[in-house]
Image (tube, rainbow, N blue to C red; front, side, top):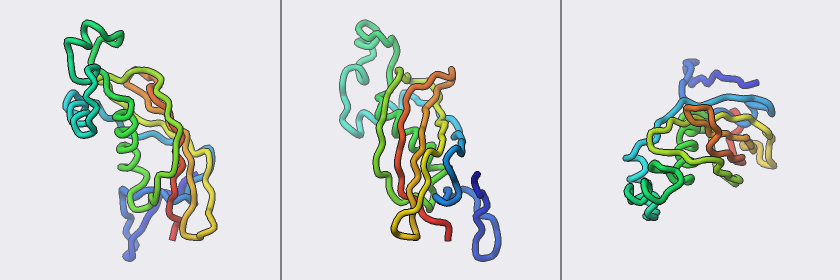
Length: 162
């Protein structure tokens, strides 16, 4: 279940807002749009965070020494892109805090791979403060071949529907 209508003070539906914790219940499933991870994404990410391991910066090394055979994206980049895909559709103006998650990388994601996120709500409950609740989802990051490349189970603090 998910109530999908968000209206403004004039009664107009506002598109693009996130869900409230009390709009969802365990078992609700959805998926995001996809996004292709590019060479530029990898270069900018490793430069920004200082992750300058040869696996990510030296294509000759990758070609001759890596068992992957092509330029991999850091698992942390895949996680961050998955979170970005989710922010666009589920947390706008309703998300309050990312509290915790266990993350597991299952297989490499390479430049040129397209990912999307498949989510299932596994917990949605109020807190002692009536204006917020907690939502935990089970998230699967899936590539264009249908392979699960990363899984995680974030617990988020989310606003209560006004």
